[in-house]
Structures are given as structure tokens and as C-alpha cells.
Length: 174
Ligand SMILES: [Ca+2]
Image (cartoon, rainbow, N blue to C red):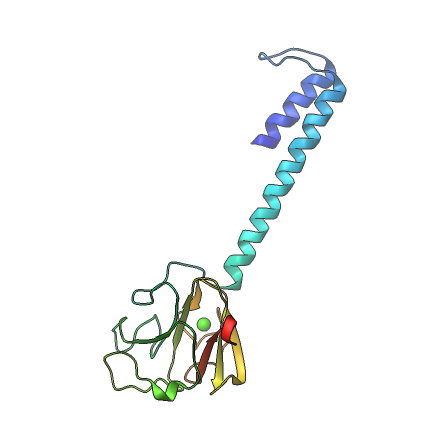
């Protein structure tokens, strides 16, 4: 819509006419306005592309319940719950070198190699999750305020990490 108005005004200017209250301007000035508007439109297009990239890279969204600010959290099942309970998670503010030492809150389910959903609600850092204890084995990285509600499928974090996580670290401690 902005582009259309710009083209119309430029066209009117180029023929030196006056219509619909548009004051004719010298061609040079009209051209400079047109160039500036094209630049603004170009910048908007770049922002639109960047926004699309962010969405594709990971499901940025509001943090799930019971994963407070400053924490990275894991749950035993998909959709940020363990046995239907969002509060039944394991969370850290720095790192957990071995999830086998933890159970999902309020359950007896051990945290090692059982996570099916994860979220990084940290204040600043990316979070890294590993298949083996103490930063060992294959890993993936979650930027702040992103997560994966289903580690079984290939959207978000690449598939193959369900029921494999054994340690997690914020970047500062990684
Ligand atoms: Ca997934």
C-alpha cells in the first residue's frame, strides 16, 4: 500500500501535474523520496525474512508453566509435562552433570535418558543438552526462550534425542 502511494505520487510529479491535492515537486526531490521509501520497504522485507527464520529455527514462545525465569527444564513426556503434570520437571539455573541423580519433581521417575520435552527459560544464555553425563556425546543447543515440546519428532530439535538426555548446561558453565 505504501509502495502504491509512492508510485502514484512519483508519476504525478513526473508529468508535472497536480491532482487530488498532491503538490508537484521537482523531479529530483521526488526521486529522492522514492529512493528513501524503497529503502524503508527493503528494510521491512529484511525484517520479515528474519522473523520467518526465527520461527523456523525453533518454537519461540511463552515459557511453559513451572519453568520459571532463569531455568532450563526437562519433562518426562511431551508437551512439557510428566504423567500429565507440568510441575513434574527437573530444572537448573547452572547445569546438571548427570540427570540420573534427579527425579521429575513429585515423581519417582529418574531424569536420566527419560526426557521428552525441554525448554530454555534462562535469563541470557543458550542451553546445551547432552546424551551422556558431563557434556558427553551428541548434543543440541537451545537459545534463550526456545524449547521443544516433543523430542520424538523432527521439528525443533532434530529427532533422535527422546529418552537420551543425561546432562544439561547453560552456556556460561558449558
Ligand atoms: Ca521436536
